[in-house]
Amino acid sequence: MQTIIKKWGDLSKEEVEKIFSLRSEVFIVEQECPYQDVDGRDAEADHLLLYENNILCGYTRIFPKNTYFKEASFGRTVVKKTHRGKGYGHTLVKESLKYLKKKNEDIVKISAQSYLTEFYTFHGFVPKGDEYLEDNIPHNAMFLTFS
Image (cartoon, rainbow, N blue to C red; front, top):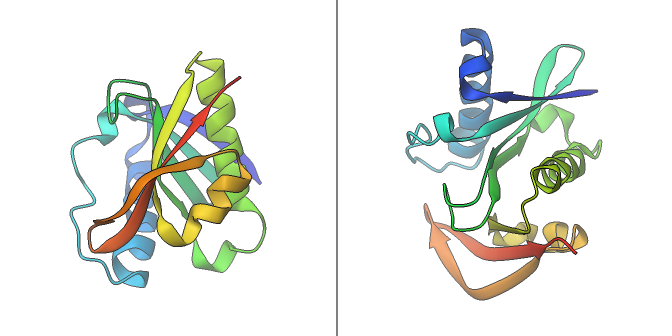
């Protein structure tokens, strides 16, 4: 398993294609949620790619504060179905938080699918506010403050 973080402009065409393919495979096809994945925000993000044997099997995009939210954030966190159960979701969150802390961010806000609240709580996130629908899927705003 290997993780790499790249700026949008440093991604190859093949990497962009694999990122979009993985995101649509899980969020659109598997979760049966038709939504506009290509939202024009990828150029603002840093991209964390997780590989196993040269296969992109995990991904998330990371935003500094005052881009996606007022707070720093990460999202579109995804693990390929065939590679789940190996702790890769935890790796993506840990690496994202490590990167944001290194960038001197102090608060991280995520929009988490509600069924993953316990997963993110394990990493120190706290839900705030009422549950809401995002693309017809229940979500919670969750926050983490670095001490």
